[in-house]
Length: 623
Image (cartoon, rainbow, N blue to C red; front, side, top):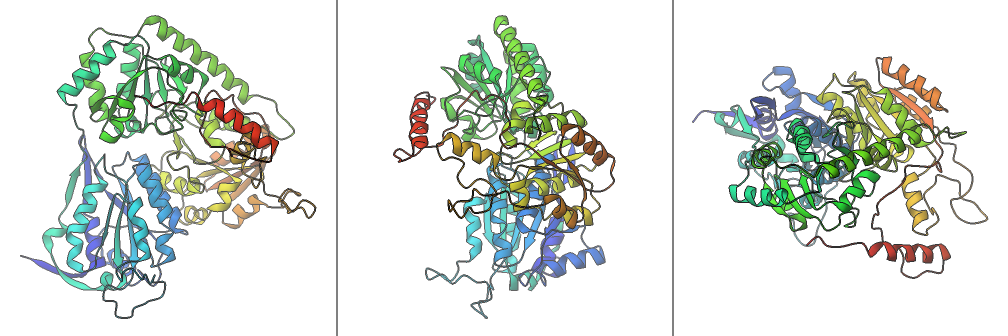
């Protein structure tokens, strides 16, 4: 058997460069490059290997220098999302805090079922200099390291303690990354001595491999059971989730819904599955959903979930659906079986085609279809009003979001993740492209946004990328602005400044906690609380110091002009706009279960508990 002598790190880089995915005849690189930050755990291992690959051409593995380890995982995750999970990046970090900084990113990727490859450095496998700098000394066992924190948030975890262990570990990692059911964060821990250790590797290990991303077809018996339920329906409702987008089944869904007269409600991940003005589109569903979708969910007799995992926001904490029966089309059994559904375990595109073929002449009751269209039209009028409030002196957040929606192109991407904006965006954003609405709400991670802008721009440089970030999220993770600048990537970043946490402030108030600890204020010596004057934080100046071009706006008209200027710019540009923290939002039509203190000395908390108790009466298990 022919062999080649390489270090473990050199072998890994060469192996990763030869991995590809294929679906429907489309072939892509599985690992398109490596994000990294070097320290004593990886500088002489993966750092040397990546340098050697670049200088000698022995492996095509581009390297991008990130500024924050959590952020680089977010960038890789956003890249994977935009490529429909067919391609991603690897992320390497040093031993200790560098590696554990990636744990949050790993959790986000796994919860959202998006593939990322994490390569945290680890302690010496030989333990010769034990304990080394940044080593956890655990009295329960010498083989425990801080990287064990990755185990519960990884879909596959392995520690490569000898060079030859890399072969089965790397192959297993690729299998999981390309599995549409099992994908998520994959973690290969690499002890720093093993990274630099040489081994005679079989040349066959480095051959080009193509991993087929499967489209499972539905089982005949499951299909017939699902068809029986659907044929009995007069008032059906489709819930479109992220699986529709990742499967690239949006055209099939749009045609199916139009032909059958079934209204389509969308989750955060499924937003854009149908165009906002599609005849069967009724908008978002759930706690931050449209009144149209939520009323229809309460009245539906059959709910067809396609590619959704039914999070609590989608189900309004199990209060949004009435007495409906469920049919769940999902590639994952875990999700297909939820709500005591008739399961249809299959790829979304294959499953829609099978349902359409089996339904014959059946369609929804025409009165139901007409009611859905009427409700959807009424909701669009609500959105129009929210976009043009004429609020002042500071604009309302809905006015800024509406202006941005009007300004972006059909194929442009808007990115957000946390705070009050995801709720407003889900209720009011008008998408025409399945990739335009990029809101991370599986983990709703503050700080995801700017890093995700980097990932999206790498995935599709021809799309305009607009990052929406609140002041709270911006302060947590603005570090990848210099990465965008250094890579020559143009992203428009909109900083919405309201001097605190708008979403949690409003939630706190509704729960009787009086917005405690949710505003950026001086400590008041009289009250002892953080309710003094506004802090003199200048986020525009901060963004400029990181290398971005910065524009400011204080009115909707100024914001419109700034966005047009930013769109024409050639470099990453920040538009800073201050909004009224207490401006009106869109009307809520569903609930979200956040427990309230059962006993309290505060009148506000007692009143909130009474309201909470009333709301819980609508909560149910779907049996």
